[in-house]
Length: 177
Picture 1: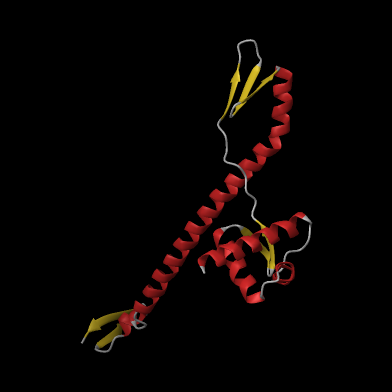
Picture 2: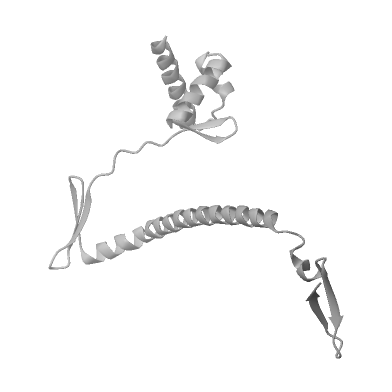
């Protein structure tokens, strides 16, 4: 049973990849038509593939295969004493003149700006989440304090058992009875 499930999951993933490669919209209906599987089976397998990260839901009922890139290779850049530049990526080595290095830097500037923007956005999102949590805590504390306030606290001087006398200038003095 588990082998049949894996087999149909692989079939659905292959169908998603094929349809996407042909620039077709991938829906559960098109998958059922292409694979011959029932919609309930398609729903189950596409859910599993989405949970595993093999496919992405781009909108309700529309799927695309998740991009898979090879693992990053080690990289280094060395500026030689004569101004030449060696860029090593994995086992490959590029030797650039100073002018080529500057041209490559100009080409990479957009990617560097994008990386900085992504990092800034990530940090901003983290700070916003922390501030939102602090605001929630403060609102709870204020609400708890508002419940504890005695509505008669502002009338301490009008308490029964106290009488007032007027002074010559019209001021009211409180005096215990």
